[in-house]
Image (cartoon, rainbow, N blue to C red):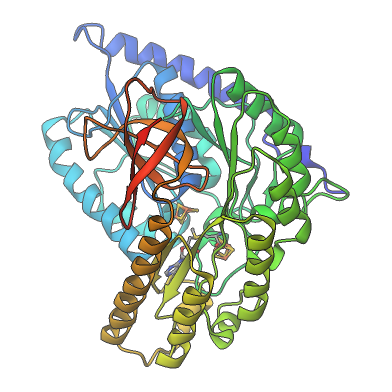
Length: 475
Ligand code: SAM
Ligand code: SF4
Ligand code: F3S
């Protein structure tokens, strides 16, 4: 049996990091004694919810050190970029933003700049930052994020740049605080890493192997959140369906859902991401049975052609995917389905692509996250020769967006005239006179209300639909 404890960073090591926090607190208090105000820090997050979750841990470290967190890098004394490597575009954005920081540091030479996350686990990218962005003071990776206090302390005490990136299958870090961005909705990681090695994807290389957290730690975290007033939990992992597989005779994800479902105070449970190759009938029935588990499933299919799915190393066929979808729809009428799709995988022909469109028309997803294939150095797909032009890929991409937008609008139209339970997120971003929130099916609803507050569960009648959102009134 694989021992969970052996993969956990010992608590003695976490305690050392807490001691570094105290030492930094002293440094900060001394150096800013004269200025009369606490230094400011900004954490900028790129990428997925896993990174959002990691950034909340960094923010807890930083505020415990005595920094005031701010949303802008303009007047920050400490700036951390938590980066994403999943596509070239994400990396370009980081480089652009990092370049801009050089001018800000010229105005505030005491500014400390750190960069961490998935991009730093790519050797060539880390080297590029180290040699070409010399205004960056700290470089650390996904496996050393928990050592941030020590890294910052070394920078202050040795007055030099500090690099701490290791190659590793990964650890589990328990016992560090998290400064949550939202009081009523929270991400809870159930596992880290990925073993699937889809041929296009960098994630397994930068996040290590699959490792599940112990159910006790997960449930304790959810109970503490519920105690603090949290209403909605999203359980996170690159492939939550394989939760527990790395530990002999352990509970599986469906059983974990049942346990979370029992926790008083939590009203809604969502999870992401599921891999079609591992989704079990048991999970589908459990979703239907557990009243707090929402009628919402994000199930990436990536491509509709079996040839491309095989080249992608996804290990399911279009037929298998459609079979799962039928079971999900039968078990949960009205379920909302979303998915990820890649357009322009090497040598995806027009015929292959049209099978993606066909699948989209058959399933009728509520919405899609569509990406153009981006070669990632070190992955098998990056070495494949590709005869398809960028122009054709963009043409296919636009066509897919058009097809999906039509379906999204039609599904949203079917909500009009009906009443749904909404978890209120706050004032609408589009209209300060309205509130905004989400249905259990994850649809955004902007609505008029006479007093709903963030965190309330209210009933809203939908009066109008748009492609991306619904409009309604509280009843
Ligand atoms: N673990 C999840 C899964 O397997 O579905 C998703 C993880 S990944 C962070 C999110 C999405 O990014 C993937 O589902 C895929 O559609 C897309 N993606 C990953 N690598 C990509 C690449 N090289 N080019 C374009 N899109 C990519
Ligand atoms: Fe990437 Fe595939 Fe793992 Fe998802 S399952 S993170 S797409 S390798
Ligand atoms: Fe997430 Fe991007 Fe890393 S999608 S796991 S932050 S490569």
